[in-house]
Image (cartoon, rainbow, N blue to C red; front, top):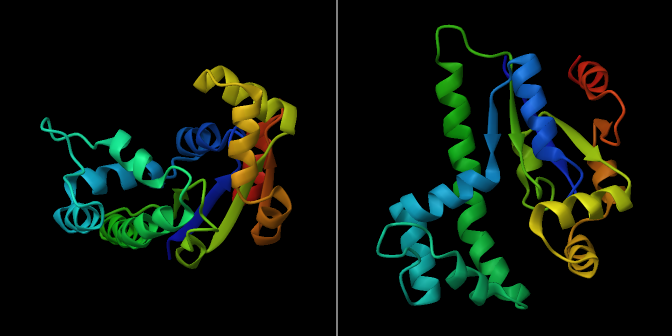
Length: 195
């Protein structure tokens, strides 16, 4: 049986870095929900059609790429609009993940485990497709510094983004394992969690 591991964490905790370590050191295939959502919004005729019906205009630019500015302007400051998009995108991502795991399970030598990486794993209801959940955490000041450097934004902007996310304590309640990404040895922590 293939174990499905959910990986999540707050902005700047290093979730994507941890996912890359899990893949490179343990050979576990990774399904990235964020990139998959973008791909489905641009490529899935069903998802694109539902979004276009909701927004009343094409969600892709003439070159075929997703019009992220249009989507951002639609949801900016409007929680109800964001929920409307999530109701279209989240089920599509979940179904795509399940199709991906089915294809992997049918390979001659299927992996013993797969990883589903999502910043909103718990909020989006993806825990029902994960057998176990790993939460990545880091000290707040380190998270803020990482995001400011990565995204070129201010401390206040990062704080606002963090405030919109689920709290660390709520994530911990859903965790089967917690990885602390503050400079200590990640591989030994991951080995213990995966075991």
